[in-house]
Length: 294
Image 1 (tube, rainbow, N blue to C red):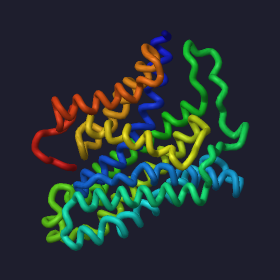
Image 2: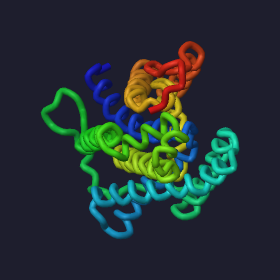
Image 3: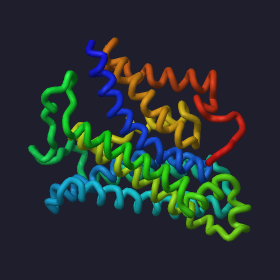
């Protein structure tokens, strides 16, 4: 086993997992609910980008931005249709969770109808997938692009949350929505923006995932949905930094499981980790026992 190679594989895969899980963590940190339709938005982002390339001959970077925008809009509409009406009626959060499951089923079924159930790929030659020569390990240009893009988006999100007025309002709503409203913050608008940002991150993750493997189908979000949940439980629900850390840890466990064991054990080991974390430290590795969401 080439240890350096496995570390490289874990780093680029972890960047995608972290980027995807950030959407889960962002919504939970601000609204206090899990959006289980997030994985379906991931799928739609990837297919919107693919359609932009195949049907409109757009360059992949532009198509990726369109995929992010489209996924963000879908996620924004989800908040208005599947979450906001229940929240305004004072429905319990479990109702919003169930609503998101229904939305996920609908979005996947719609994707199967629109894009068919067959595996689809970016055009041959459009993705630089030959290993970079002269390195002591194997890494392709697209894997480097995926890593750089994912880390760049994570840094942008962190800067937005910590250094902008919008981020300050999001943190205020996360801490106490009622108090933020009394201070003049449009809470409903912040909820919508939060979902848009989470959806854009999911769309970016879906596109990068599709580029890395060049294999997409409407069910592609199902496996990563559970990985994303494992990531945020590992890092601490609603903890942005924890989601980033958890993504790399889960990817490392998955990659080294394949290296040491057989590939069909990788998911079992990841979910065993989820069970152990819930059993031993349910607040996550860097979460706090008291509910502090920001």
